[in-house]
Image (tube, rainbow, N blue to C red):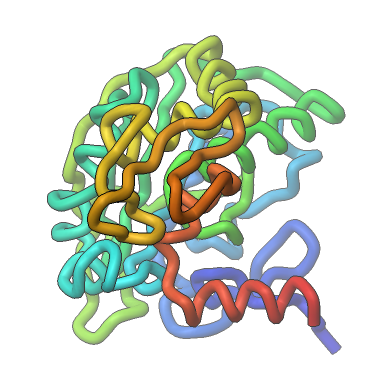
Length: 261
């Protein structure tokens, strides 16, 4: 009996590979690692220990897990709308994220940080980069189930058959290559100074009024150290609240149930 779990695209995952599963599992994907092979996910997937070359870091923004009360009803249903109303501005406020390519994959966005030179790695070094990639995906309110350096994207022009009618993958932003040092800088800031990074990305500066967490009319929210933000109503809270507030209540509950159940 195959006990492989289903990944976020509905493909059955067994160890480091995939097998045919739900609708859309035969769609063409693009590897962001090794030779950049294209094919169905089950045919081109591999494990972290088989990675010798990293070409790109991926952030996956899924409209369906976002809170319409925060991003707006249309942005929680349309990837084009999510990009135009929110993601484009978020990216432009950070020097590394500003270089990302963005693809509309059907019901979400792939934010792709392509490297100017591949990172050659193996073994323990690949596992270290995998941890960095899993940190980078948290720069925006993306899908936390996304893989690290073995994450894949969908090629521009490919068909996403998970939906009725099927949708064509489009490029919303061309982007430009980034250096190894830039991806390390982004990862470093996410670990060491996330309050500064997220306040700038989501709100354009280190203080915003009214406070987006409590929505008090006479309140403001500001950076209170490297890992916390503060307002008079909320007190000091973890800076991750700036990211979590974008997720729907249903999604956060499901995540909690999966974590603690």
